[in-house]
Image (cartoon, rainbow, N blue to C red; front, side, top):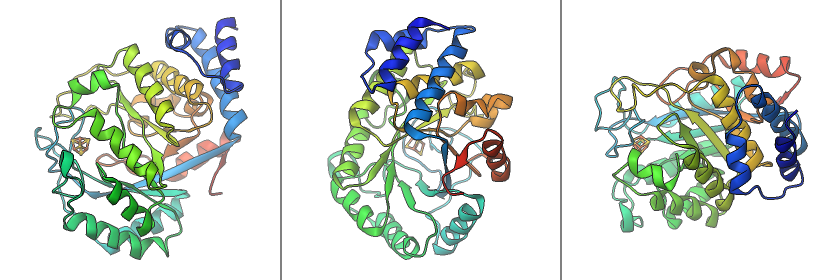
Length: 337
Ligand code: SF4
């Protein structure tokens, strides 16, 4: 057992902050030492989150035709992909998805829309203007949230403080808005909006009393320093949930030919986030099946405490029953059991 990893793990177990030197050491482990890293990440997860696994489902509630140029995304109008576009869904679609999410055992349902913001007038300093889609969305949430068997979360792009307050009063409990990567690397993957736009959305959601879910995507050409910067920024913002996505190579997007991350590298990344954010919900989200393949169940041993079930935004996931079986076989317990 690697003694340096154990020493750093003890800092996490005692909730002492891990510094940059320790962080770099964790991400530098190779070969059989990765198993030591996973061992400790699992211990840290058990200490703070026990045997509980949170499962979230999502609905793509407005898709495609996005004005932004995020290079990993199949919904951007900048790239020619086969993803179909559609406008904001109606009440029936939301209600059907709520029923499905309950049946699948999800403990939350995220309503996700494409675009810089659901408010089509919202650009940079103009976030106080609102247009139909945002108002329509809040109306739909109001109608659905009171009778919904699962809490509703929203991932609707950039938010002003006023929009965040309105979301909260409509019944939304948590907002997702990923930072995606480090401030430095973000400039290389998106040129149409800034890292600060994303950070201020998180801060506005927090000010409105909403829980905040924010993480990143890996396999997009990031370096070790970018992974550390992202984890440290999320720690500073004090997010509640950290979704980790792994690039799905969708033809037509600029990153379609990027090399895939190896499953053990992915497990190392999950474990790293558990060390840095010991008591937070670490959620393995997009790209799980294609990138982890047979090692999917190892994500929990690597410190994950949550995953996404059912379909993803633009790609299909495996049946939720297989994920619930995997969790039961590991002796873990779904939050909504
Ligand atoms: S990640 Fe969001 S903002 Fe970026 S292109 Fe995709 S839908 Fe648009």
